[in-house]
Length: 105
Image (cartoon, rainbow, N blue to C red; front, side, top):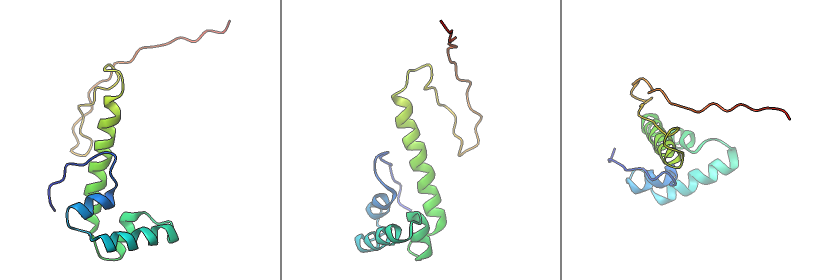
C-alpha cells in the first residue's frame, strides 16, 4: 500500500482512490451499495473483493488516530497530552485534570 498522510476530514474511500487502490467507478458502486444496504463502506469493499480487510483495518486505525490528534489539538494543553500509541501498545501517559466541586445553593 502506498504511504498515505491522512487528512482527518477525508473519508476512507477518497484515500483509497488517491492511493490508486480503488477506481472512481468502484467507489461510486460501493457508496451506492452502502446507501442501499446500510453496511459500512469498508465491509462492502472487502465483500466485493476490491480491497483486502487488512488494508481497510489499517486505514481505519490511521484515520481514527489522525482524527483524535486533530481533536486533541483543539483542547487545552493540560487535557490534550496524548503521547500514547494504542495501536502499538505503548502505555498511556498520565493526564492531569482539575477537580471541580459543584455546590447546591
